Image (cartoon, rainbow, N blue to C red; front, side):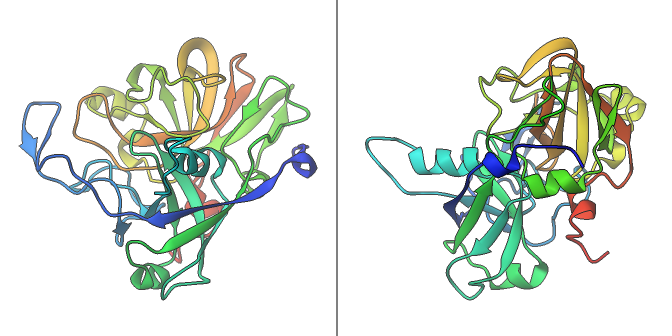
Length: 294
């Protein structure tokens, strides 16, 4: 068990509502110049959940499970309530339906999607059939401020302490060993690079180069996979730093547009390279939290 300051962090409620899919135009332009019409962000995605493949669907940026957003408006703080939902929600947090036919049903936060600023929640199939767009979902936000007491060179973010305890973390020579399904080079990271904070949003893995996909075994990348990104420092935003290591969770599907791909929400980062990835095929939130029956 990794020692943390869990008794010092605050658990607080944030709320969102199930949001409709949105589209700016019928077409997205692919990286090879073709216009295509595809499902995208938002809504209740009945047949795509964490544990499913991150690529191969006829889709672009599809968010698994249920997408929520806080639509409350405040002229003093534009976007304030939704910003709080996105920053304070952590992967692994409990999310409870607060209205509608599914009221009282419980799911789990599985990621955050930047640009659209959605929080993503996994519910079982029975609950998703009862949900409708506009239903309220309350998250018990818990994890912001979490520290690893024995690893001062490792920063943790966006992570519920309960999920952290289940991930199988180990210590080796003063470094944190983190089980991951894949290691990804910084060279193929795209959209999200340059953000000035990593307490919300995500960072896309570009899968357009067949050689890199094969070299790093990314053909079987899954939604919910924990992945390590080499030479990536997410301490105060997302930058390239040789020797740094960041670990995150895959939160949305592959994309057809240049610079985009399966998104990764950051969970750990070390500018000093004090994270050691340990490859495990079951290093996926669906497996760790037993979210799928098969």
